[in-house]
Image 1 (cartoon, rainbow, N blue to C red):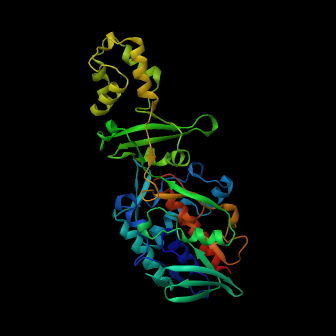
Image 2 (tube, rainbow, N blue to C red; image 1 turned 120 degrees about the horizontal axis):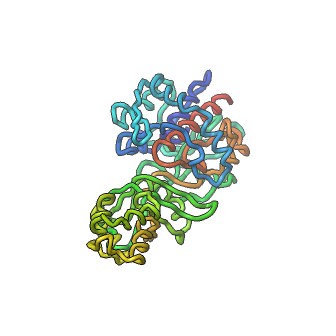
Image 3 (cartoon, rainbow, N blue to C red; image 1 turned 90 degrees about the vertical axis):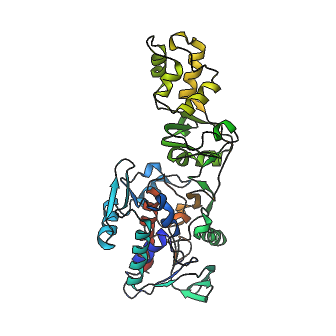
Length: 396
C-alpha cells in the first residue's frame, strides 16, 4: 500500500480484512492523513449529506464514475465511521456536511490510523516509495528502507495539490511509465486571482451569489458563498467552478450578486416610493460592493429611484445580474483543494479498481480522473474507491 491519505488508509483497512493477508503501508510523511487534518478549517467535512454523482468532474465516463462512487452507499459509510471507528458524526444542516461531532479533524485521522494499527497492517511512516517495478512474482517497491516485494500494490499517492501534505504526483508518473492513459493534471477547487485593484480593496467581503460560466450545453452554474481576497476571489461558489477558467484562460465568468433576475430589479428600481438607488441596493448588498457596482456602472448612488434614467437603470441592473468578473488567473496547485485529471477511469476495473493491463496493481482516490465539489464529496470518493481497491487486492 502506497500513501496514507484518506483513500490509502481506507484501502489498507479493507485489504487487511483478507484472510492471511500481510499488509504494509508506506507513507512519505511522519504521520499520514495530512489533507484530513487541514480540511474543513481543521474540522474535516467527512461526508456530504447526499451523494451527487452528477456534480463530479471527469474526462472519463460519467456512468463509470457513478458506479465507483456509489459502490459504497452513503449510509454504510456513515455507519463505518460511527460504529466501526467509534467516531460520532454531526450533520451541519446549513452546509449539508457531516463533521466529527468533536469538531476535530485530528480525531478522524487518528481513528483511521489507530484502526490500521489494530488491523495488523504494518505502518512505515517517513518512508517514501521512489519507484515501482513489475516482476514475475508481482511488484517491487523501491523504498527508503530498501527493496520490498509484494503480490499486489495499491497506489493512493494523491494528486499534485497541496504538495506540503505529501502529494507529489508520483503515482501519476508510475502510471504513465506503465503505459496507462493519464488525463493531464490541473488545479481544481482553487481560488481565482484578479489584477483589478478596486476589487482587492474589497478583501474580506463575503456575499452569496450565483456564478455561471460557458453557454449552451457547456454552461455551468455554481451557487453559494463568494469571498473577495487580497489577490482575487474564493469561497464555495468560486472554488466549485474554478476548473473551467483553469482549463480555459479566456472563458467568461458571470456573477449574479443576489440571485434575483433583471425583471425583479427593474420592478424594484422603478417603484416611485423608493429612496435613493444606493439605499435600495444596500438593503440587499454590502455597502462597499454597492459603491463598486455603482461606480463601475456609472450610476450615482444618491440618485432617487424615481429620477433614475432608463439607460442608467438598465446598465446598473446588468451589473447586478450579469456582472463580468475580471479574473486574471488562479492560485494553482499550491492552493488547490484537489487535482483534476489523473488516471482515466477506463484503465481500471470499476469494481476492484485493478489496472486492466497490469495484474495486481490497484489505484484509488485522487490519483484517479475524478473530483467533486467542496463539502465532503471528495472524501466520499476517497472512502468508496479506497474500500473497493482494498477489497479487490485482498481477493488476490
